[in-house]
Image (tube, helix red, strand yellow):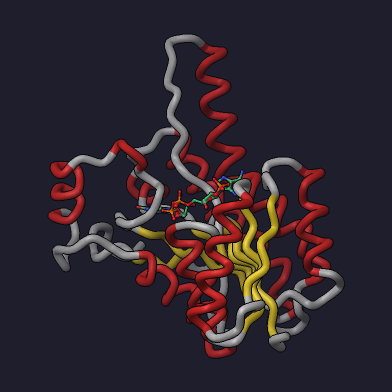
Length: 248
Ligand SMILES: NC(=O)c1ccc[n+]([C@@H]2O[C@H](COP(=O)([O-])OP(=O)(O)OC[C@H]3O[C@@H](n4cnc5c(N)ncnc54)[C@H](OP(=O)(O)O)[C@@H]3O)[C@@H](O)[C@H]2O)c1
């Protein structure tokens, strides 16, 4: 058993799996939470082999929009102190319609997936956060800063405002709260079949470094913010976007 514990939502795929792998290599035990048991189990096994600790990653199958399913995460934490909560689960949910009822459903789905997942996981684990030294990290999106995703952008932007309140509440206990805001990141499930070669090229061209981001680019930022070295950084939004939106 490692001496530190991290919980990573959406840790079975894409950016979350890269974050889980990075933290596991640093010696953390990592709980990865998501809805698909098979995907989580495969990621846990792969990361365990990679980091040389087969039991480093524990899968927890839970829909984090459902308050009752948070008990599964708490059961897996099993009374340990939590060093880092990485709220990475989320995604863009389509479903635009012409009706108000459809609009309500579309917005609720996106707010549930991107806001409620983070709020419920963080609130469930708040009492268990290591004091002093705990870390809360929220993964938002460049679309929170420049739009482009309707209710998805709005949901990610909501994380920023909430992070500032949470940072103020937890700061006196030496717990930091920060947002990592990724730009375009390839090699995840995020775009599904929505991505085209033209869409990829447009997004790459919008960066200053002329490349797509990779999950490890985001994992490295999270790794820093989770580390003891980042203890004086709180209430911040760190853009990891290749320069496609400049600092704000
Ligand atoms: N890729 C990009 O260009 C990009 C850019 C900006 C921001 N982001 C953000 O980065 C984060 C990671 O995305 P990604 O690119 O790595 O895409 P991804 O591969 O689709 O990862 C999203 C993860 O969230 C999990 N998840 C979604 N809803 C959940 C729920 N209700 N309960 C529990 N887990 C849930 C998914 O697992 P299950 O389906 O098994 O539940 C999946 O593992 C997301 O918040 C996304 O919005 C991505």
